[in-house]
Image (cartoon, rainbow, N blue to C red; front, side, top):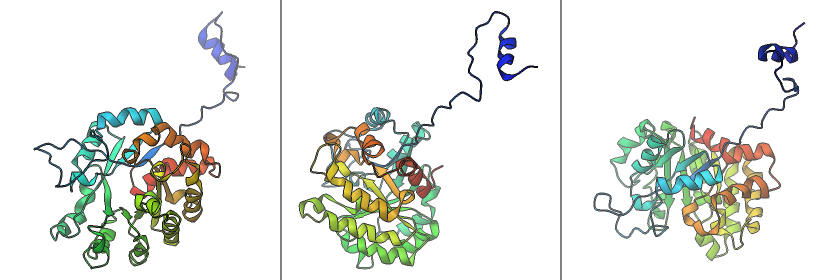
Length: 308
C-alpha cells in the first residue's frame, strides 16, 4: 500500500534520501501581518512648474519623495501607505497617484477639497472615479476653522455621504462639532486623525481632553480614529510610554476594527525609525491581542477606505 511517506521514496527513485516528516507533521509558516500606514505626506520640491502656495512651509528641509520613502517602508516591513497630500501641495494629489502608478498595490492617496470654492460641488460626486483616490482629507487649521460653524462646509457633508466618500479630518479643539455631522450623515465614513490631538494640545496641556473628545465620537458607528503621530506628542523616547493611556482609551472606546495605525513620519522623523513605530504597536502595547494588532496595523484602514 502506498502511503504519503512511501510515495516520496517511489517518486525520488531508489537510493534517494528524503525527509521523514509527513504532511500532517509539517508546521505551516505563520502568515505575515499586513501593515498599512494610514498617513504619510509626500511632496516634491518647490519649483516653477510645481509651485507651493504662498507662505507654505515643509515639515522637512528636503522633499519626502517616493524614492526617499520606499527604504523606510522596507525597513519597517510596511506593505502599503495611504498618502495624505500636505498643504504645500495645495489641492493637488497627483503625486500620490504617481506613487500608486509606479508601485501598484503599495500606494493610494487621499484628495483635497476647497470647501469655499463653488466649483468643487461638481467635482466631489466623482472624486472616487479618480485613479488610486480613496477619499478626502481636511485639516481645519485656524485660517479655515470657521468653515465648520459659519455654513461654508455645510454643503459638503451630504454630498460626500451620497458619494460614500471617506473623510479624514483634524481640528484644533473642534472635534466635538463632528458629533452632529456623524449623526446627520450615518453613511459618511469619518476618520479622526492623530488621536484627535495636535501639537497645540501638547503646548496647552489639553491632550487628555482632546483624546476624550475623540473617544466621545465612538458612539457613532461611522466614525473611526487614527492612532497616529504618537512620537510627535510624546515627551519621552521610544517606546513613548506616556502615550499608552491615550492609545488605550481610544482603543477601548472604538475597538480594533475602528482604530488605524499610522506614522505621519514627516512630522517627527527624528523621534523614531519606521521599524520602531511598527514595533511600538506590535511589541510594546501589551493590552493588544494578536487579532487586535491585525486589525489596527492594516485590516481596519483597508476596510474603512475600501482599498482592496
